[in-house]
Figure 1 (cartoon, rainbow, N blue to C red):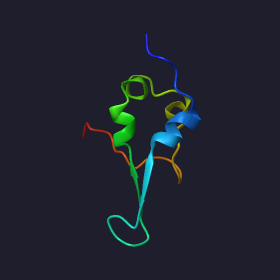
Figure 2: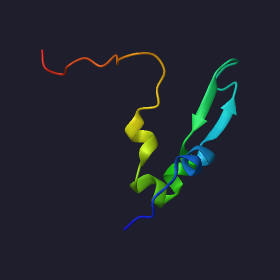
Figure 3: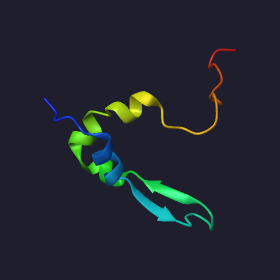
Figure 4: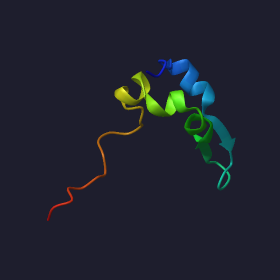
Length: 64
């Protein structure tokens, strides 16, 4: 059974790459998270809370 990952551990594993792909954009590199099987297997509380900015979603239903 995987060991639980705290939000702080997950945040620390995400690498910030400033000005990529262009100035003013900060790319979030999740490669270190994917490399750690413990974090990959159990998303934990950060995924459950839906960390996003803005409101709603831009997804449309697939049928129709």
